[in-house]
Every structure is written in structure tokens, then in C-alpha cells.
Length: 328
Image (cartoon, rainbow, N blue to C red; front, side, top):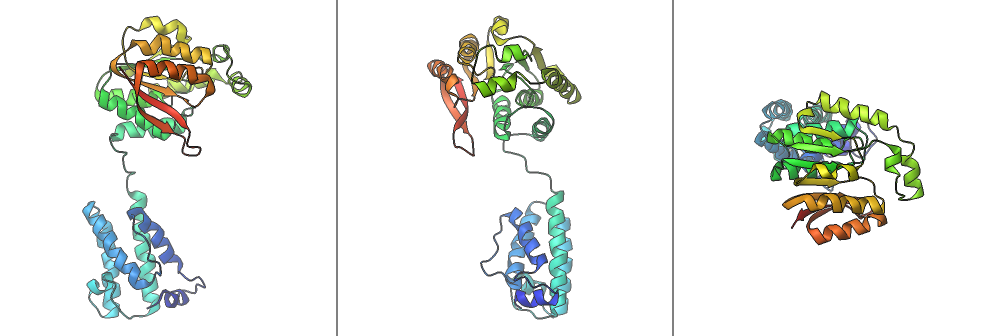
């Protein structure tokens, strides 16, 4: 039974009927590729693999519901259900086949929509949920990849004293705090002046400095505190509202350091000198925006103290954007 016959039966002038096209889109969630020349028999042959995958994942209900439609179709065709799922030839009215395609497609789509999002490797559900929430509600530019990287580092290294220079909205601080909470201990000290005067104390470039001079820091600060309280992260978050140069004396030893403050040549290098030297041997340093010309001296200083573990790249440009280093 060619798919064109089914298409004609449901009044479609498309080469592939709507239900079948929808079903193939759904099947892509299971990494099942449509045949080069899709027809009803190939569809059901592929469906058998999808049902097996669903069964292995413990999703029994959608498998049983799909099989009800397969059994009905087989009964109308006068064959065993294994013939249908095996891609064998069967004959029945095209409308019955079309109805089966519609019903099975709807069951699979509903199953995909109701399935919890797969957790990234090495990140527990409570931490991942927090990352998604911070991404949706807080200001900043921390990418999903960077947030997950920070969370994994904290989960694996189990640092006690963490320091972040340049909190802004908290998009990168909150993943660290969530991982500390999951670990059952540790604190993240966020150093942030929330001041346009501090942000542009030393020049970076005209466009960047102009942007920072117009930010509503008071509003961003309010949202940060509101979010930390609402998500019960305050036991692990300590804010130091001051320029980073004035806060360095508060720390003797640092286990995890994230440098993402002012990107001026002077400030970035100063943060490395004042803070990276306090990171214990074996501790981690995350350095943001490594592709900026103004951060080059800071990168060179870090190279004298640390070994590179990994570098995150901008997927659009391919440029290095964030480096993870381990203190020697």
C-alpha cells in the first residue's frame, strides 16, 4: 500500500500525508531516521524499533496504547500484528490505515511532550532545574554550557571556598551555589560593586563602556537577592559589595575562582594577581572572555600560574570564550 494511496484517502495532495510526516518528526526524538522512500510499511517497520526503545525506558502505557491501534489495524487487515510491525504486506481500506497513522502519531507526540527533559551528564535534577530557572529569570550572558561546566566542576571538586569576581545578575554564581547546596556545604563569595562608576573605572572600548554606564544596577541587584531567597540558596551565597581590588584581603586560600569582572587591561590583570595566586594548588580558575584583546595580559599571567583544563568556544564564531584552568 503506497503512501500516495493513503494521502488520496484523506484528501491530501501532498506526497506524504500529514499524520505520517508528524510521526516522522516525533520519531526523530528516538534518533530514528525516516526511510529515503517512506511508505506505510517502512513506517510500521520503524515503529517497531520505537516501541522497543519506549519499553526499555519503562514507558509502558504509550506502548500499550499504540499496540491497541496496531492490533485494530491488523484485525481489519486479517493478519497478525507482527506482520504490521514487521513491515510486511497487508491490505485494508486506506482510511483505516490513515486513521491508525493519526492515532499512533498523537500517542507518540504526547509521550514525547510528557517525558521529562533528559538530564545533562553529571548534573543532578535539582542543580539542572536551578540552572534553567536562573537562565530564564536573571540578567547576564552565562551560556548553558558554561553554567553546566561550573556546576560539574563544583560537584566533582567539592570546593569549600568559592569566589566569583563580577556577579552582575547572578547567572553564573547560582549554578555554583546550587552545586554547593547539593554537595551539602561550601560558600560562594560574590564580589560585585553594582556601580557604573566601578564598571567603567578603566576603559575597555567605547561601545562596551557606554553600555555599562547606562545599566540599571539597582534593579539587577534586587532581582539577584530575590532569586537567591526564593530558591533557598542564601545559606551558600555571600555577597561582598565592593570593587574586587578592595576585597582581596578577605581571602587567604581559595578553592574555586571565577574571574568575570571588568575586562579592562588593568582590572583583569589585577584580578589575576590579587586572586589567582591565592587559589590552592590543584584548585580551579575559570576565566571568562579570553578572546578579548584587553584580557591578554591577564591570560598570560594565568599561564604562569595554571595549566589549561578545557576551553569553551562560541558555537557561532568558533572563538575561545572561557577557559578552565587548574592551579599548579
